[in-house]
Image 1 (cartoon, rainbow, N blue to C red):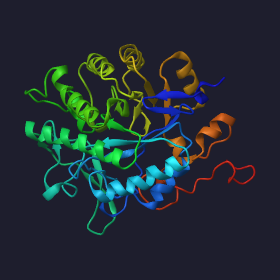
Image 2 (cartoon, one colour):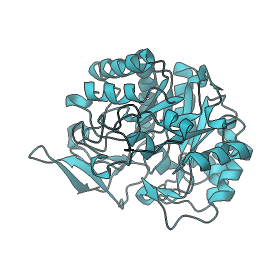
Image 3 (tube, rainbow, N blue to C red):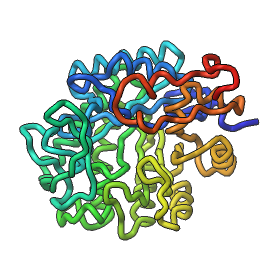
Length: 375
């Protein structure tokens, strides 16, 4: 019997299957970074996932780094997400909100008072972000050198995470996922490439992971640890990430988080760079994943380019307990059913991944809607 379609108990939730929807930035939020009715329909269509993990959602204005991404720090945003949660629950689904602070991957156009973005260390950033230009259009812009966070600034952000978690529960979400991956703020503290601090938040592995642990503890205290997950990209290289001792660093994280009674740990395979395969990935990635599986004794979610067969093998081998699917969920709102029936999949339209209209967002056909002979 397929393990992908066996039920699973996750924290407080009973999942009908192990086909999870990965967090996917789609840049469709409206004015004030409020979720729109189009977003309500997008998530409603995908409610047959064992669990939906929302797109990354900024915990504060300071945490924003890309145009048209939603927040969870205003009353209007909470109300918008409540419509999403209600629609998913009405379809029998389950959903958690991913909490996001981009750190240095931002631009003054998003920051309070036009300030520089914040980071563990003030240094150049190898990347661009997507802003709204003077004509109201989306445009790519270089990321400026950020300002280094003070200890007081760090503690304020920890408090923002806790409040954002409470806001997510107020919005009707079943829990939250702390985004500690992909080169954003928590990941910037973890990795030696981006953290050159000499205080209690830099240097040793314990110090570089201190911010993550403080966020996890604050969020767990706010809403209960069994409603909290954490996402990591060990050995990830996106946005200039890299660590001198990755096995030791992420092994320590897995060991510490294992004692936090979390709902889950979500690990992105190191062979993925952003949304694509990373041709230059660290050859030790298989060793890394085995280490995390060994040291983290709770529920482990895997993500990173999985298809039905590779997901089945990963579950059967014990590599992970659940599998999150990304691009295939963009193009296939009924992905669990398609995988169950081994049906053809719609191909995703990459040009519509970020920003735009309902095209490439809520117009992908389900199996019942597809013309005869079509995907």
